[in-house]
Image (cartoon, rainbow, N blue to C red):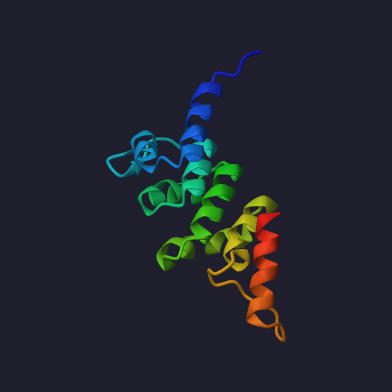
Length: 135
């Protein structure tokens, strides 16, 4: 059995690996709107972390596919732009556990509003968040 999506999927993954935002814009966006609702496109936009690809993430947050919602939530939650990550707030009550975990990415991302427990110094909390983020 062959996977008809293998080559397109590897192509968008390569764009993320190469950090080629300009080419990713050409592939993923048409007139500033996402070309398609596909988890691989959302993953690529999430990995590139570029404001130009924000429409892909925002569209994915409203997707019917749980994997697309999860990647859209993670990418949007890590954004420093308030209007982007506030669209993830309804996903904190999503029926899919993976989506909820990724929507909480803002709480875990180091240096981006990470919350530290009471009584823990800033440097200690940052170090723990950074180590947990790398795992």
